[in-house]
Length: 349
Image 1: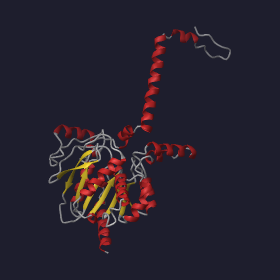
Image 2 (image 1 turned 90 degrees about the vertical axis):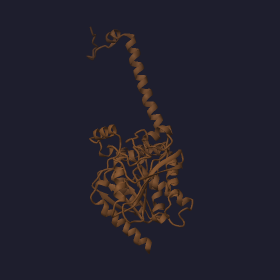
Image 3 (image 1 turned 60 degrees about the vertical axis):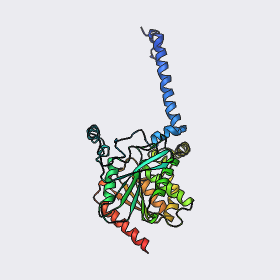
Image 4 (image 1 turned 45 degrees about the horizontal axis):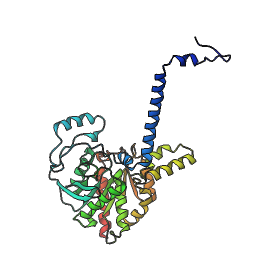
């Protein structure tokens, strides 16, 4: 029977006496384990470059399976079945359809051998696109393959060079960082047989940070003094990796927001990709620069593209699309045709 106090509250002592001591131990142990798990996750995010690598590059999500040496071969039947199921969640998670006439290549990268493909153009042309993809998956992801085909087909008629950073896809390595991904891009750039003036560098999402980082390093080393790429396309770019979650925290008091901002930029220093800090230098030296961004992008909000375009005085092309489906937009081919034509005319003068 509960005893009441004068304020009308019940005494908990009789209830506590009914609880077995072992239950107290289990409850206390579970609470301790929960706190320890949360602390480990927070600590890992703040201090472990490997934990951060898993979140930034998402190399563990290596889908779809594909045969690097036989790019013409589509995914196996079980992958196609799984891809159809995954397609209800994301159209780009479907199986690899195969790419005919593609030439595999391998290069020495920062973490070992990096592996990629060269997709030949399907008409008369002279441009080559060096494509730097975003995080998760591999170079055989549906929306990436769709873009290779669009770029290679007339009227664009570009060769496309794509590869997986060390730690992703079929490339060697486990724990990519900003430095390793940029080093891999540099290796791919230097291995291109074309004159640099015929190359368009294209980065998507995380690949925009890799692209700008690569070009910044080339400029620092003086390797572009004799001429840079024909142009640079940044699709769904971010101002920096730490800024992506920060944009959703704008409601915080300014002092707290500044503290969180400083903490994230410091803790993610191995994976920052500070494009906002580099875009002015790159846009001055590479005037043929365009940003493509979807106004419905929920992964890297459109605001990032707007800020970069403003800082670098760069043209921003907006699409009523999300993060990875600009390639499906009916206006993309016309936009790129006009863009590339204007770059060619500028180069001739």
